[in-house]
Image 1 (cartoon, helix red, strand yellow):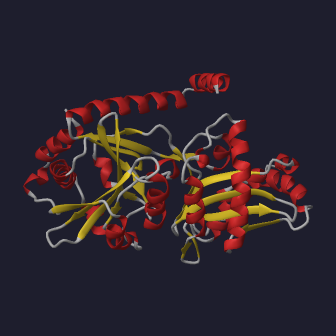
Image 2: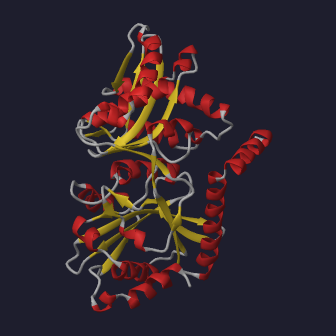
Image 3: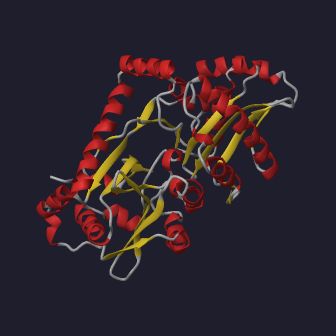
Length: 395
């Protein structure tokens, strides 16, 4: 049974089967400017979405990166009978091996993928509504497959309605730090670890002009990014990893988003450790008043790297947001060792593959199996180490 059929079967068996869905129609929008008013309205406080789905972030990605990679905008807006927007799905459409696949915008640069939901609808949405959405998509769109990956089960204590779809765990979880608003510093980072970091930081504090700050001027942001784009390729080469920041349009996208204003900050905020002689480390991420999510980082190649500047910077960031009443902080997907020093739990993420055609079913099976295999490797230390050795040998 296909996933679309499965959700419709679950709908047929549900006690609420006699209730009509609030979703009366959908619009499929291929122009970002046309979608912008609805998109921004569903970003407003009180609605349900993550900072990774902001128009100012994904619009830039689509125009500067997505188009280079062969993606076209495919934005789905679900409306009620009075034409009020209930949900916006910020998707992109691409063709791969003759299969039309719709996936979330953002590619490798978004940790979390989710729709933008009207709060009251998100709180009540059920399989009836999802069945109606899928039926309308199947009828109106020339899409073989929805490939909806790296979705959070919940966001700010509210269930992601798409968790009702058939799903599987994503390849990676996301290391997560929960913080108690108003809590003492040691509730965020233990005293023993703090003392170790303070011992290392004393070496850096001896440097002239040593400081932690969040870049606030265009000049500072540009200067820090100039340094990042020189150093990050060296760090990735050390790990025998492909440099995703060298892909077409990515550097322009990152620079544009870091410079774009949002409230008192930027769309992507840059946190830095510096001294007068050099940039020592940077972390960049997005924030929404309750959660900070790290997007990218790197640290110096100089001798100052031996004093763990990345960990010291992370401590500063955690304390900054903890003191501002934030409840959670994450360091992006992946199992890097430094993340476990701060984050003791994981944000579970899931993938859903929803086929609409026979070609879509074949593609869904292939993509689902590939992601399950990747997850198996990531969770098995022996297999993971073997893959890394092979990568180094043939890289």
